Every structure is written in structure tokens, then in C-alpha cells.
Length: 83
Image (cartoon, rainbow, N blue to C red; front, side):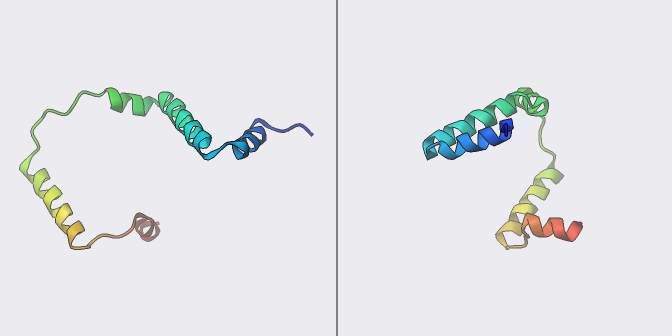
């Protein structure tokens, strides 16, 4: 039986040491990122130099205060509730 490329890859991964696996994962992540046009667009976007409106600043302050008061929920819970 001929192994698929993914099966061969799985076998090879199992043979890697932990440092080799970490390096390989970093390499794959970088390669995938290089091909992501949105990530490239965002990385190359000019820095936002417009002043932040007061109401946006107020919203950020309120959100941070809610976090400090523990008024947050886990993302997976929010997804379940919104589904």
C-alpha cells in the first residue's frame, strides 16, 4: 500500500525530537504566513496615525474596567450562547 503525503508526514513527525518539532512547526507557520495575502496586507499597512476619538477611548477604559471586575466570559462559552 502506498502512503499518502500526509501519512508520510505524520510518520516523519513522530520521529522528530521536541526541538526539531518546534523548529519544523515554526518553519511551517512562517511558510503558511508568507502565502496569506491578508496577513501580508496587514503587516504592510501604514501605521494608524489618526487621533483616537474620545468615545473610543471611553469604550476601551470601560472594557478594561469590566475585565478588572471579572465581568467577562470565556470565548467558547460566548460562542455556545451565540450559536
